[in-house]
Length: 356
Ligand code: SAH
Image (cartoon, rainbow, N blue to C red; front, side):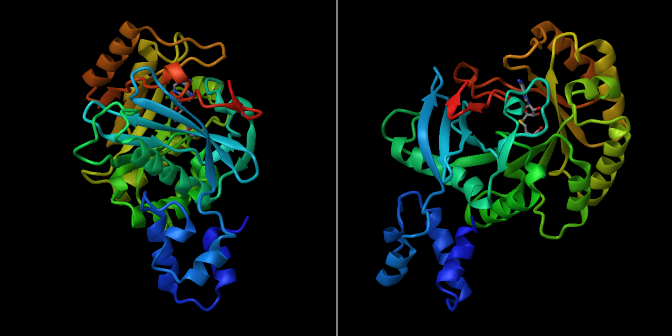
């Protein structure tokens, strides 16, 4: 399917460039819900544009977690495929959305539910952008209805962060993710440090990023999960023998080129009981991080999926954290949200249109 912008220029080849910008701006006004609402366009143009999708995603179902601080939406795409996207509210009423970049995923990490779907297809840029717009509409419609955790009657809800941690491997869909990032940065009030792309570590794309002038330097999180090659290969099947030294080499160059107070790298580390959570693993992670530099570690308690892994004990996670801290490695523990509606990291899966 050609992009909305492409379809627009096919329909109106002689329009000046600012016309599309006008339309794109209207896309991000949460109260405008159809072409007819774009009053900066002539009536005729609005009528002709009705053949283009105003939204490329439609809510099939929205589920709320028990404390209403997490919502998960099942979105149907134009071809009937279904993806999931998540909205999270922290204690200060700040809103983070978690977006998908593909339908399913080809990476097949052993602990991740999405991997079990296999890859159906990549999303196009419009479908990624429209997940943000979907949540804008949802927030607009729910701000006075008490469906959200915080009270938004005085200050309107505002999405303050976007994480590409939903279904899919964003760097396996590099061009569309890049286009979506550039539109989101241009049309929302979010700066590049408010957006995080999480990747299993697709090295050719990470390399490309270093010299790609049109790749916006949003934050990057690398799903490391082990600094011991054997273990990483076991749980992340796309890993290989020399992945770790090559990643370290890339990371040092990344930080030389882009590193500053606001730009660091994050290593994500899902804590799997008895697999990657021993003292030896903590020491290996600390040594690996210290060989690179400005990297923060984020420990993710394993969220249940139907696979053989189990979540590390809390005391294990605490001990692991202390080993990292003693080695002067900055580490945090990710708060688990939405696991009661299978909206937590790694729980997103759509099986023939139904959630598992
Ligand atoms: N493909 C991207 C985005 C994946 S989801 C990536 O690999 O980074 C974001 C994070 O959730 C990743 O770090 C992923 O490894 C982690 N994750 C996957 N399954 C999980 C599970 N069952 N419990 C906790 N975290 C999980």
